[in-house]
Each structure stands twice: as structure tokens, then as C-alpha cells.
Amino acid sequence: MHDLQMTLWGSILPWAQATATLLAPLHHAPCFTHSRQIAAGCELLVRLCRPYPKPEYGLTDTVIDGERVAVTESVTLHKPFCRLLHFERATSQTPPVVLVVAPLSGHHATLLRDTVRTMLPDFDIYLTEWIDARMVPMTEGGFHLDDYVAYVREFVGFLGPDIHVVSVCQSTVPVLAAISLMANNGEPTPNSMTLMGGPIDARRGETKVNHSAVSKPLDWFERELIATVPSNYPGAGRKVYPGFLQHAAFVAMNPERHLVSHLKYYFDVSTGNAEAASAHRRFYDEYNAVLDMAGEYYLETVQSVFHEFRLARGVWRVCGEHVRPHAVRTTALITVEGDRDDICGAGQTHAAHDLCTGLDDSYKHAVTALGCGHYGIFSGNAWRTAIYPQIRELIHRYQSREAAESGDG
Image (tube, rainbow, N blue to C red; front, top):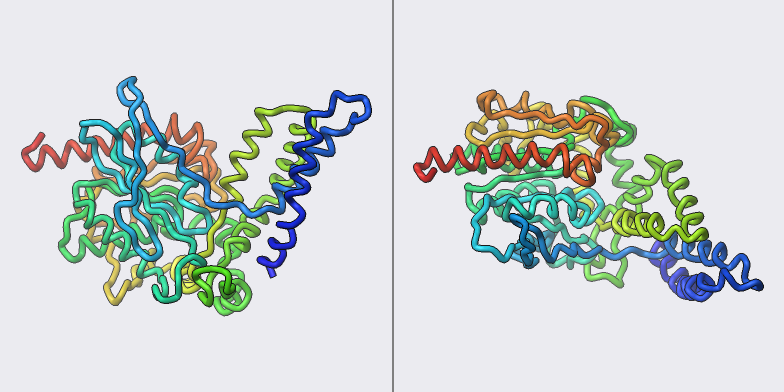
């Protein structure tokens, strides 16, 4: 029904956009005194009702030591449900390698564009780009939370242990699990892992997200939120948690804020405030672009992370292996929280320090960003000026330590 609705709007919206384009320049004409208001209304209608494709990263260059350097985006590994992207800098320098693990929680990995852009001058960046489940054929099989952990282990193994892992939001849980399993099996582990705004222990600092997750039994989520991909997609027949439902949940968390934002956009367009209107478009082009998640993965995440707190309680098993964070002994732990985060509450991410008991305290670092919400800890001014400098210093510190201990520094 959602696809049918999009099809119906698809026949109307081009006319609304054409009307907006034609009327906007005519506001000075005496007989078109309200043309800009009508154009603004048409444009707002288009933006509220049209589908939003995955945005581009647009990271074509960066500045290193005052010089502009080209950046090339390429796919290093291609898995059925994820691509490992490499943002390669055209320089002879060999900076520390950072694997940025994007969350699989409804938005595309492009949500971390500012995260990657900020880190590019200092590090060699790889990024997990999760694939929209509706685009994955049924022949590729299912995708479970265990598969997510396995992907992270494979990517770390592919890049080598002399790397640093930065995870955001939902990805913090499988990242900590993957590194714990590697440590428990005696495998080399990354130099450091940074966990940012993630539900390591969702029992702490309850938010609307936590409340929503535990307010219904698991069978309600399966019955009400899991749908079947229709026949006009490559993943026809796959059970998914649709992106449009997740988007509705995002909006429902702060409906007044979004209503005010859209009304402001209407007035900005109708009064010719191009800069503010452009900022609105940039934000919502990203915010409104969502993907479907494999149904089994979504339900397992709700059960393991929010209903049973398996990682925090020490009872999580991945493919039969017991996840033991206390086995981590050589990977530095950096946790980041925002004190105004309304998605991952206070203490949920810092809880990792209580789990990683095998780490010396000198290897543990907790950063709390004052006045910072969820998205602000990895994107925007607070991220660039207050949070990232601390992470950069710590990553370089542990890169130097590893080099010194191996006799190379």
C-alpha cells in the first residue's frame, strides 16, 4: 500500500514541482502577488510526499597540511548486505587506518558523511555501507544480528589488527561483541575501539526509544512492523522492517520540532531566504532517505539489546560463542555520550567500561559532550570542535604506543 501511494503521488508531484518552478520568479509581477507563497506551498508538498533516494557522499577532496588532496571512493569488499567503502587520499603519507562502522538502524551510511569528512585529513578511512534489504535477492539468504558481528570480524581481519574502529549508535553493540570474540579466541584485536552513543546497556538512562522497545512483546513487533517486500524489487518476498515505518518512528519522537521546521521552510521559501531553505533541504534530504532492514535482524536486535540486555548481562552468544568483553586486554576503549542524547540515554555507552574488566584503567577513556544531542556527537559543530579532537589525540596516542611496543617507533 505504501508503494501504491508513492506511485499515485508520482503522477501528481511533477506537476506541483513544475508549478513551483514557474511561479517563484513571478512574485514581482502585479498580477502574481502571491506567486511565491503558492510556489512555496507546492514545493513543500513535493518534499513531504516524494521518495528520497540514498544521497551521495560527495567526498571528493580533503585538506592535508594546508594542501587540497583528491579523495577517491571505492568498494573494497562487497558482501550481500554490506559494502566496505574506502575513501582513499591521493597522498604518499601512511596515516593510521580507521574503520568506521555505520549503524544499521534505518538511515543510510551517508548520515556519517560529516564524521568521515572530519576524519579524512588525519586518517585512512574505511566505512561500512549497509545495503537496503529490499534490494537483496532472496537467494542471498537471511541477515541476522550474528551476521552483523561476523561482518565486523571479517572487515577487521581484512584490514589487519593495526587499525582503529569507530562505531556509532546501534553498531556499538556488534562492534564490542566482535572485538570481544576475537580477543577471547586469541586473535589480534584493533589498537582502539570508539563507541559513540550506543545502547551497550539499555537498562540505563531510559529514553523514548527504550520505552517503545519494551512496551510491547516481541510478537507484537513481528506482527505489526514486519512486512514483505513487493514484487517490483530485487528482494521480493523478503521479510523486512520497512524504512518508511522507521522514518515515521523517528518523526514521532519529536513531531512538534519537525512541524515547526517544515513551517519555517515554507516561510523561508516564500520570503526568499535561500540560505535557510537550502539548509533545510540538505538536512531532510539525508533524514528522509531510509532503508529497509532484514526482519530477522531487526527482531533479534530488539530482543537481544532492548528486551533481554544480553551483552550487558554477560549472556550473549553469537553463533554459539560466548561474548566475553572482559577478554579484551590490548584494545583501548573510548566511549562518547552526549548529555542531551534522547536516543541513547546517559550511561548506556559508558557502561562498556564496566564490562571490559580485563582492560587496565589507563586504556579506558570516557567522553561526555555537554549540551550535545544524539546526532551532535558525530556530526556538526560540537563533533568537529569538541569531540573529534579528543578522539584524534587518543587514536594517535595508541597508534604510537603500538608502534613503540613493536620496535617501530
